[in-house]
Amino acid sequence: MINVLSVTSECAPLVKTGGLADVAGALPGALRSEGVDMRTLLPGYPAVLKALGKAKVELEIADLFGGAARVLFGQATGLDLYVIDAPHLFDRPGNIYLGPDGKDWPDNPQRFAALSWVAAKIGAEGIGGWSPAIIHGHDWQAGFVPEYLRLLNADPNLRTVLTIHNIAFHGIAPPEAIKTLGLDPKRFDQGGYEFWGRVSALKAGLMGSDRLTTVSQTYAEELMTDSFGMGFDGVMRFRRNELLGILNGIDLGVWDPATDPNIKPFKTPSGKAANKKALREEFGLPDAEGPLCVVVSRLTEQKGLDLLLNAIPTLTAKGGQLIVLGAGDAVLEASFRAATSNPNVAVHIGYDEALSHRLIAGGDAILVPSRFEPCGLTQLYGLRYGTIPVVALTGGLADTVINASPAALSKGVATGLQFAPITTESLRNALSKLCTLYSDKPVWQKMQKNAMAQAVGWETSAKAYAALYEELAGRS
Ligand code: ADP
Ligand code: GLC
Picture 1 (cartoon, rainbow, N blue to C red):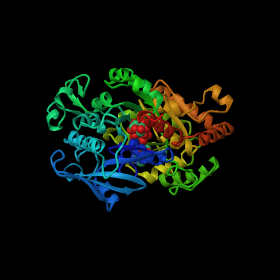
Picture 2: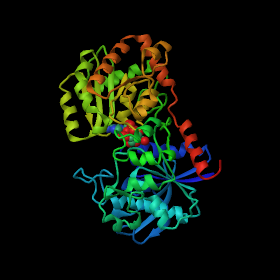
Picture 3: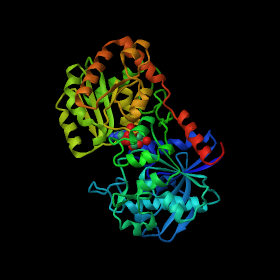
Picture 4: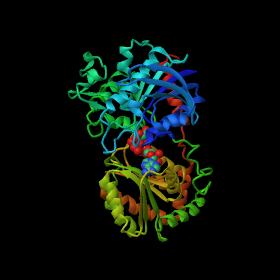
């Protein structure tokens, strides 16, 4: 058994804003059969403490960035959890990152430095008789782990891995944070956690971790380029020998059309018809000749949905329809609401897990026109449910969909459509092509069958993580 501490700011189903939660929630289970004892360190947000119920106090900290804290150990939703009970940092309503004004909580640097510090403390001293051989952090929220391990004089054999789920978030703080976060001032330089004169938790993790991974091979390559590195492409090139792309999987226990309690279950594509009918009724959409397209997404610049807003007329002119489930940017929310003046467009603004299952089950196609996408999970759900993905050719979207090119169609291996460049015009072309393919039933059904047969679970990637841990722990 290799002991691994996973350090994450969100974890499904307890607390989720995006795909990071799905990954953090599914990996420990997927790794169990690979000889990895993965335990998860999470901030004690109200929902997490509630789900934890009765738990053991394993550690008491007199002052964790401005208040007393305890680390609790317990089980919830099949996970072994260490939870940081620190009300001054985590006992807040609403979004875990944003205040009621929609802006980052001003003390986010302290809140997630606390997460990293507790991880390092567990790494340095063990906890309740358990010690990790590897600390595996996720995104900037776990970035300071290597810095704190140094300050706590941890065993140099303890290894660290940082997974980049999205390099757009840098964990920036002003230079005064060197003091407030208790960092080593000597490491405020290019080789440490300094980023253009400010403190960056992400930079600390990228420079200090033994290995870096990201969630697809294409994104690993993209990260080293000016267009995708978001200012860190130089750092990524510097660390290219320690960088590895491991594709995300999806939790097949949660996303299985044959057993999904949120839908009318089905095993073959023909079973989708009943779900589609129910969905049209739910959203008051008329019958139509073309494909029913769905979107399940955060509404942000990243996701390229402004391109879709411009392309809607092309889709509906060809008999297609669209249902969007999403929340986020106020301008995008308003634009999608306004788009419902088209009778073949329906929109639900909000976050709704059960509805996301109904959309993916009942849709003919799922649209993911992202400008960048480290991995993307909804196209994988689409594949599993025979809902043909139409995706931008980038990141994990490039690695998970087999484009319906003439060659792939004639060989009968296509699973979806990819478009490039990532512009309205090429999305329009992809949607036109989608409508044409949809009207050719034998071709369409073959694509659905291929999609549903594609391996989208964690099996391969769990083995890749286990192999990485074994190598780092010196066991291979
Ligand atoms: P990201 O992490 O960038 O948001 P992913 O595709 O990796 O993108 O993961 C998004 C996750 O969040 C998926 O599980 C998706 O189903 C879910 N999701 C996004 N928006 C919503 C929503 N409005 N309602 C329900 N689930 C959503
Ligand atoms: C990020 C990315 C997304 C990825 C998810 C899980 O939120 O935007 O592409 O699937 O993390 O790794």
